[in-house]
Image: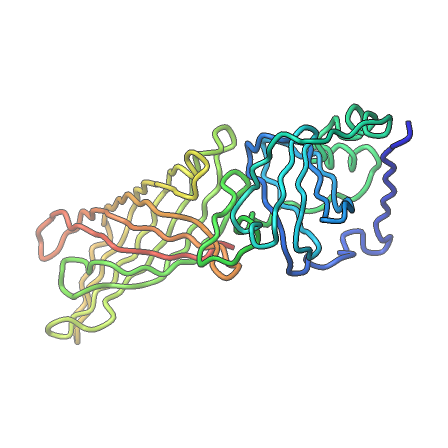
Amino acid sequence: MPARLSVNAFAPTAQPRRPLVGPAPEGPSVTFPAGFEYARLSVEDADGQRLVDVRRSQQQWTQILLPLRDVYWVRAPNAEARVTLAQLSSGAPELRPRELQERGPAEEALRRGLFAVPLDRSFYDEYVAAVGLVPVDFSHPFQPPVVGGAHAPLAVAAPSDWTSKLELGLGAGRSPLGLAKFATGPSLSWRTPSSSLHLLYYGVRGAYGVTPLAARDGIRLHRFTVEGLLGLQAPASTPLFAEVGLGWGLLGLTAPGFRQADPALLTGHVAAGVTGRLGGMPLRLSAQVGMDRVTANGQTGMDPQYGLEVSLRR
């Protein structure tokens, strides 16, 4: 075969997980979403210099980092598109039928051999297992950035690649029992995708809320809850989510020389929102509506809850 792939990989003996290169430098890039029509792609510059060849999996998004050029040609075996540097940020290019077709034994060999198999994650896993290399740790995969590498206020996260996450949040909403204007406080959540249905996830959430300013008569309210979560993540490949929570809590009331608490608070909520990235940080923004079953002053009733929460995913 005139064209053949030969891979030679050797990890550092003393530190097999030591990175040999740092993060990719800032520069132009083009991103092809999951489901993009073409699997085999190449990028050339205006002088016809081949910059990169890719055999991608159509089920995975692919980002190609490029050297700086004024014009690029993105080509598939039977289609092509001329893309300027400014057009990279507008999304995946629209390829049209090619006017000239490549021919020759090398091209035919690449078509039938080297690019017959997607060089994706599964290819990597099989290769590492076959040659006995130390695999890369994928427990914290990076998320796909804004299409084209342009900087936008909120970049959509990869919906199907997320793993178990700890999230530290800050919320604000209605004060319990309506004794103050609002309550605010931190939360700590853990969410993990379902092993059978990747769109579903489950987890647990603990939250604490306090009235920031004493209400009438110097009263301050404290609300602590622990809930189990069940949610839907990234329906129809969108960055949206929806979840329900049900659990137990404690509502406390403090004032000068006085304390009262209901340690048997039953609580539940529904929430919906969006996940994304802001300044490189993965965030979750949600709106929540819930209900507490609380006993205060010897009377048991339902106390509505609603508010907003923003959390940082780690």
